[in-house]
Image 1 (cartoon, rainbow, N blue to C red):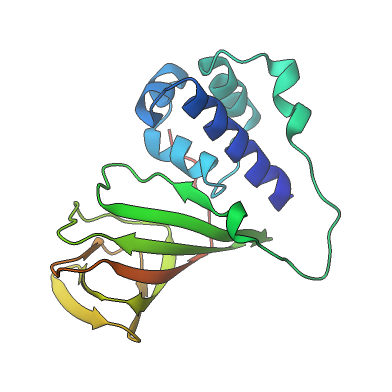
Image 2: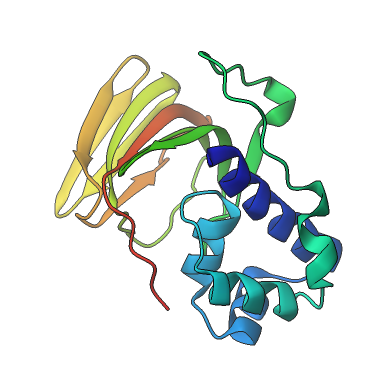
Amino acid sequence: MDDILLGIGRKLKEIRKNKGLVLTAVAERANVSAALVSKIENGRTLPSLPVLITLIQALEEDLSNFFRDVTMEAPKPYFVVRKKEYVSLEREESEGFDYQLIFNKRLLSVGFELVLLTVQPGAKREKTITDAFEFKYILEGKATYVIGDDCIDLEKGDAIYFDGRTPHNPQNLYDKPATMLVVYFFYTEKENK
């Protein structure tokens, strides 16, 4: 099921990018939120059938051809993810933030996503919220994590864990990129328009 979920999201994203469309344009055409389109493209939620059909139509794709390359591999007792399989994630209004999806799997109502995030010097954005518990481990550089009203300085080797429903934001106020391993634990998924 996870392979299908990721396959659908990757296919939607590939078609959108090949057509030179931005998330907001597709979302507007499909009458859904850009956040929902982003979650679907990044394999974080599975759309309902009506939403999926609407998105495919918004991309002006032939419905009968859409699933041709979306396949599900036979399950194995392990997962191997090659670097070339990492997927760049787009986050709304996140200039200077480079997200590389390494791993995204679900088991029943628990989702697990592993991302490599590089925050460029001076990169800032508005606080965000997620439907996940988040764990961040600083691999290189320094970052300041703003969670609610608190600012926490982190450097190489430091980690932080928090409820992503609290408004938060990483900032890089230093002169070198900060790279961190990010783990999201999703316990429920909500599909919002």
